[in-house]
Amino acid sequence: MKITAPLLLLPLLLAACGTQSATPTADASTYSAVMGNSAKPSGPTYVQAFEAAFERELVAQGLSGVLSAQATTPKSALTVLKVSDTTARAYMKTTYPAATGCALDWGDGTATTTITTPSVVATDKADHTYTKSGTYTVKLTCGADIKTSTFAAVVPIQNLGLFETYSNRDWSRDNDYYDYSYAGAVYDKGFSFISNSNYFMRQRGISNSPISLLLLTYGLDNQNSYFKPTNGSLFNLNTITASGYYSSAIITGYDISGQVVGSVRFDNIATRGAPLLTQTLNWKKLSVVKVTSEGFAYLNLDDISATIIDN
Image 1 (spheres, helix red, strand yellow):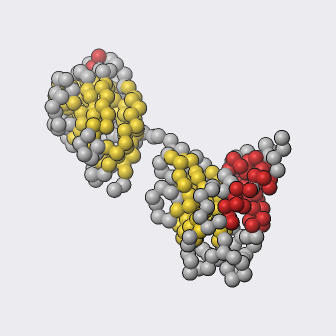
Image 2 (tube, helix red, strand yellow; image 1 turned 30 degrees about the horizontal axis):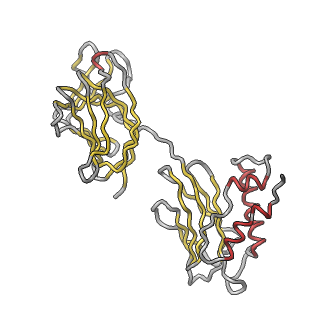
Image 3 (spheres, helix red, strand yellow; image 1 turned 90 degrees about the vertical axis):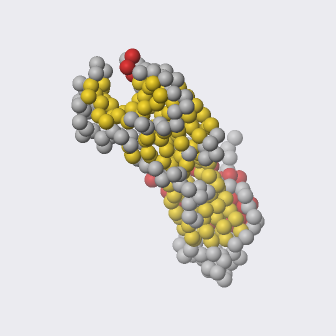
């Protein structure tokens, strides 16, 4: 069944008529249907077609061209283009008097973007890059008039690349497995790594091999081995790549109230030839991760993917 463009544009036309609309305007998938299968949702051709579709909506609403707030009933329009998995582009048109003021809220807690009004161009636009995955409500507010659209951001989880700057070490201690270099307290990528005896470690005989950190632990009651943001902020721990050293190591994440968020064991023992293991955790709003064991052990920490949450 053929779907005509006017039918697809109906939600935006209805939204423009009210003063408290929560109906999202047309998104990229809608415009893809309007433009047909020949337009792919990326590249300059797609963007041009997206913008042309929005301009047609403005014409239908009587919002096209450069309008004076004194010459028309104040109106606003909003739609959002997916520039990339992390970047949204908002297209807007406002004819409210400057005294009313219009602002665009990206929905992620960042500062709002002030919109020029009355619009002095055919279409105002602004880009925004999200730093965390999630579905965000993008909101254009002009006085009591609110228009909304949504954007689903997908931010890839990436390792922090811990300890990469510690390659120039005095690897003076070794055994049959690895070379060691005493480290003391370690501060890297915004995190503090603390234990009674930290060592950097690399696999002996392999040039430029990845460097990991050994954090000493010696019992379930040990409270002296941990890592957390240096500035005291909360953080999300997505993944951790590690192993036990000499025996199993346990990590436990705690929230700001001291409640346990999660706990995992690393039974892959490096000194027995076991490889590193990556565990997916997705622990949220941690204050600290503590390292314990059932006996004498180290956590052989290679890397984490984590996000420090600004207070």
